[in-house]
Length: 482
Image (tube, rainbow, N blue to C red; front, side, top):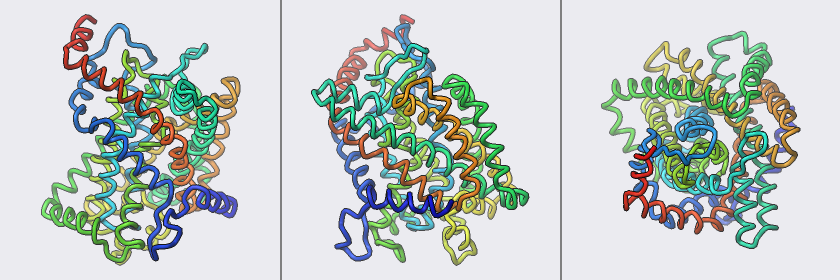
């Protein structure tokens, strides 16, 4: 089984993660898809006039329900859409991904993760707005949104129907792979690695864990987006509260170490020591792990947001600004500070085995355990819940892509396939699953960002119209009438 996944990893590495420098700079490699994501984030942030800074306050008012109107259309509230999307992003990417990034790229990777999160806010805004502009209400009462819809319909409106269809199909295929990889197998393998530290039984019988989590996940995902939303809206806030509370406690009790940690982050971001690829290597680690965590630029969360009850597509796009902000800029940074302060990222401090096996979740648990000796048990439970919430959200993403390709009558077949890989992930090497998941999920950026470039003018135009209505007071009058 391990050999099969290694072969798949090699194929994707050669196709989409080749070095754009082609080995011309010794010791430095820049994977094509990482560069593609960075360029897309910079371009859209500039084109949208730094919407990721200007509109956060208004976005918060939308989330709290101030701008709800009678003309809203959708299945769930903007807040429920946000929590459903966050359930797929706030999770093991923040816990395991951050630990892997720092253990490979050093503390400086944290700085570039924050920059990636900032640029990712605009990427997320653009793709979510497009998703609601082009969403389709199906006969069975569900909504089809996301990259498949705005790539096919949006480009068709610009006279590029052929290209749009190709990109949409490619995106849907990568989405299915991403759901199985980053949204499923990565979650299971990382959660299992932590649970095995607490419950030795699963060291000998890992498949039991895989079967158990498959059964629980299956019980939720069969119910569709409404059951998923109702589940995540309860789980996500509680998990985030527990995790952030523990992080704050560690940071407060070690407040004297925080300035040193930040100095290390900034100095290592531009002048790293003993990191493969030097500064470029640190940037690559920071960006690729941040994208894996927040999914900005991948077009995945746009599917969850497409079900939101809103009148204006750009309104939900503004809500989505909070995803990378919460996921990367807040949660990932807090995790990074704990890992740096406790020093577990350094192999010399006794965690070499976890680092080499890329068991990031277990490494983070060890970091928290150095300060709160009983917390790894609580964190282990939280990690399983994080994995569970991410899996149920990604199962919906993958199922929508499957329906786009094969039709609604075959949706159950995807769910069975998804749950089968849940079990498989429990018996395959964790390190191999990390590479497998990472490459599959980031492959979605290839067709998605190309579409964002082409369609960005439509989003810019609607954003300007919306801001003019906001300034004139028209939006406040609409909300007051409800």
